[in-house]
Length: 149
Image (cartoon, rainbow, N blue to C red; front, side, top):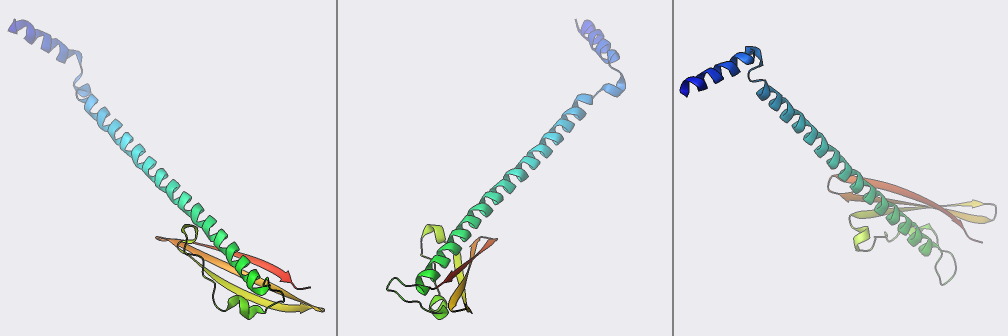
């Protein structure tokens, strides 16, 4: 029986050329390497997608904050009690966004310019919001023009 086993082993070895022995090992290493590279590329794609979503959320927050700043400036310039204030009322004191979740990490800078066109006074309000989250920073600016009648 051991003699038959020896002959069978010799037949198998003689059926495969010497150059093909161990090729399965090389192929498996190649497949593992390719799978590793695909996994690394997928991780990079997912990470970039997360950054894009964060950037979009911060951009939306910054735009909403800049719009809120412009609204607050218009409310100071044209108070409900009537009359018209001047640009000093817009910038002093500085307007700070509410301490709510939508405005977290955001700050606003307001500027006001007045100029006369004929007999009317026109105002240009510039509201700039900057929102930060970690190492990400987004800036949005809104300009509003108004006039008194």
